[in-house]
Amino acid sequence: MDEIGKLRHKARVRSVWKILFGFFIKGLLFVLPIGLTFYIVASGIRFVDSLIDIGIPGLGLAIVLVSITFVGVLVTYLITEPIANYFERLLNKIPVFKLIYSSIKDFMEAFFGDDKKFNEPVLVQINELGLKKVGFITQKDLSVLGLTDDVGVYFPHSYNFSGEFFIVPSKFVKPLQLNSGEVMKFTVSGGVSDLK
Image (cartoon, rainbow, N blue to C red; front, side, top):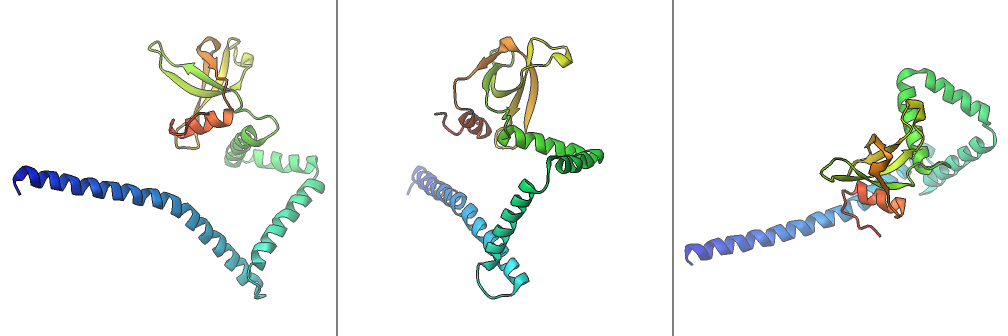
């Protein structure tokens, strides 16, 4: 085999290994989350079963599920709004806890609360060159900051659970007539997910 033939053969072998490695990674991405989930659930069941020591497999999981549901019932019916507010005020008096707790609470309420904030996707022109970013209007009234013609826009980072917040002149914001959940998925995935 001449030199060129050897090089072509090596290139084909490398290409085959690259394809096989790609399949391995895809398989790993499929199997690993499922396997880890089963492992964590099974470990949790074994841990709770070892604490109870009754000998009925799965009883630990049932006890955990019933306990969590019972706590939910207690919180719903017995802990009234003043008591919940008292604990919230108490947490807000501790500087580090206040920052973390209020940020997480606001963020979770923005996604799951009654007043969802991430339901208005927009396309924002960032500069004169026409660079655009997909974001979500989270504040329409910024008059308290003296900004009557501006809106608050949150830009999620791709492949991350964080983002950036900008105050943007309204004239640079173009509402998108798309499902906000799909736009969030599209943005967080770095544009890899398809928009529907």
